[in-house]
Image (cartoon, rainbow, N blue to C red; front, side, top):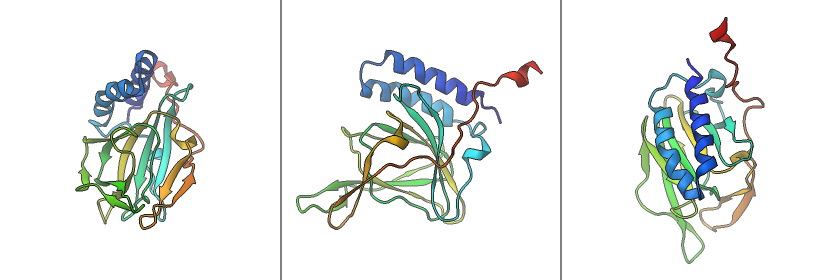
Amino acid sequence: MTIAKLRDFVSAMTREADTADSPNALMEAARPLLADLIREDDWLPEDCARPDEKFYRQYLLHCDPRERFSLVSFVWGPGQKTPIHDHTVWGLIGMLRGEEISTQYAQGADGRFAPTGEAIRLTPGEIDAVSPEIGDVHKVENALADRPSISIHLYGANIGAVERHVFDAQTGQPKPFISGYSNSAVPNLWDRSSRAR
């Protein structure tokens, strides 16, 4: 395992955040960086890849000091899924391990939420996007019934601190939530002492 890939990603994303002139420009600049990161599955720390028997996990990998972006690993146990929810910021979802199904939703005139089309099935190396401009409400689930899946999500904010909403599909009633993170410590990207030893 080499965390250098994660460190290189964070450095490149920080450079892009320093020069991007809009959230959409940052999201577009981030896509090839995320594609490079998820191309090989040999960098994710084991502490950020552990499933839970009952609930999916959201492990913070890095948050920009100015909260312009955050990177998290989502670890899905077999059969685990989210409720219908929004993000309120842009996000890129890159599949690292296993498979994931994402279903976009829209609210109809009657207030109910319904799928907007066919669900997207992500396999390793593929990326999906969400944002208030292109569609921000979806439901996500592990596509595999017999093993965990892991996706790497990049958001245009400190996503664990953003007030978002889950929605009742039948009534459209929103319920606010703040997701937080499953870990209390982030990977140490900056200890290069092993190279010196």
